[in-house]
Length: 535
Image (cartoon, rainbow, N blue to C red; front, side):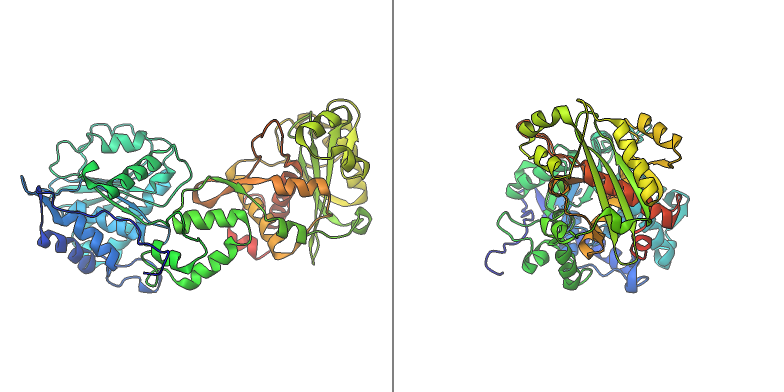
């Protein structure tokens, strides 16, 4: 083992005088996987499922150790923390099928559970595909819509989600939790694990997940408990804990760390894949956060800085509104507050580059107080023309509409996207003068892909800005919040000692990008990565 790279912690299992190792039971689960199960994706699809060494070790331990007093399994729960793309779903599907038809349990009730219905069906659909591709499994199981049954043992396997109605009191023999870090609350987990298998002799609960963000979640609580068990198995003798993660001193860019944390490296995962992902991670704080959380199993905040200063500064160019006169453009409005900054952005999709202009507005009577509060030179930026001061102590909507009308006359303004919050008055005035206004919701589903596209174009050097120092400040401030399945949304940093870090101008660029993409893909089209990247 290379210096500085220590093995990932796994529970050291001993007999403690109460248990014995049943090698026949241990080999039975291995033989099931390798003789009945098949790979379901990629070039190995349809071929026998050959367990990797780490999988064999874990399964033999889970199923092999028995209680001396009655011969039933020692372990009632498995907690496996392993990074994305290490074969979790296929392994989970095989385990669920084994518990349904091969575990010696009559009338077995097996669930795969997740917060969302579609997430819960990932493991179920994997099992269903495996049955379809394996004649040996097809002889044992029958698939009926959202239920897999085994006629010989009168057993069933079904997916369940957060609608826990009717699950209380379920006589569960096995349950596979897929990505428990995504559970929004603990209710489903508690309903299915606490007392649900009391009538069974050896119920088994399997939690297989990657690291998450919420340190107040049931997943993090289970993770901490697993770490305690790794240190001292007597803390919970019924839990088998397997945790793949870096140590505190490991460098996330070190390829030895990648191999240590990803036990399927070289079989399912390639070092080439990690080199590419690491290269992307070095380009932006947001990509780094994603890489470290998904591929190195580090518990990091869902909020991270979005853009690197180098990428943003490199996109600065010297051009004026006159240079873009008559060009097609899409507008974007982020009012956010009547008391502070408001942004009106314009995006010009030209063949060589996507050019941007951002107009920022601030009430004149609030400049001095805001400058003292935020410790940035608003008055200097105003004198240099980077921010427009409007009369009074609230943002002058008339001035904003006037700038929109000016843009409509100077350019070929197609439409203006706007954040619906607090926008009614401006929208009504703009529509009266013939400007098309389109609401752009700020939820994950709508805003994620335009946010990613702004990032992608900046990194590719195909999106430029005018080097407005106020906008540069906002680019340094803006964070993104990551949601399920990698969706992102802009996030304003929390106040620090009364200081506010504004992001309005950057949000206007994201809203405008939504309109640019929609103009090409259509209002009802999905923003798949493939479609966006081929524009």
